[in-house]
Amino acid sequence: MTKKTPNPIDRHVGSRVRMRRMMISLSQEKLGERLGITFQQVQKYEKGTNRIGASRLQQIASILGVPVSFFFEGAPGSDGTAAGFAEGGNPAYVSDFLATSEGLALSKAFMKVSAAKLRRRIVDLVEAMAAGTEASEK
Image 1 (spheres, rainbow, N blue to C red):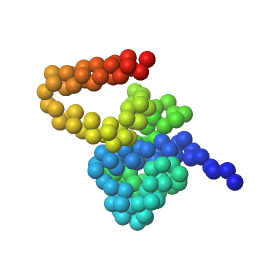
Image 2: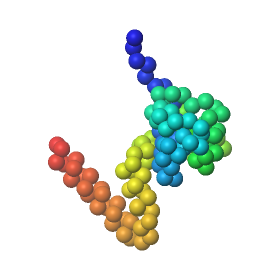
Image 3: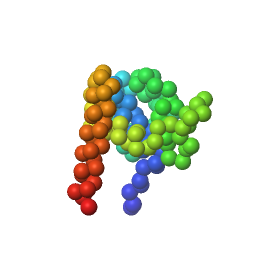
Image 4: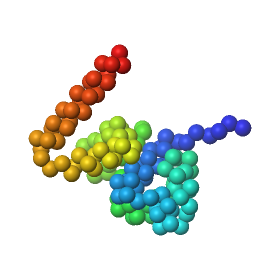
């Protein structure tokens, strides 16, 4: 018997659930409690292993404080636009970055830096570090 791979849309929706849950510092256990399911089921949703039904997705959106359309922004095979918006959504790498704990922590910490010049210097530093990493890998 072959193992079924998750549908790319289910994986994308799950990663957006995870990203938003982490943004508001809500644990899988707490989300599961509010949904009346186990944290293991939340894990399966977030990995895209189990598909999230429409009514459950509406519940999750309500708990996480976002519209249902949030979960589909930047989905594979879509044009990246949300309903009612003419401009494209975030590039996939932004969503992928924010879906990691490091990306979320870095963006939260960066937003706390109020001085524009200091924020610019931080960006310059990270870009220089990335360039140095690329050069050393060649």
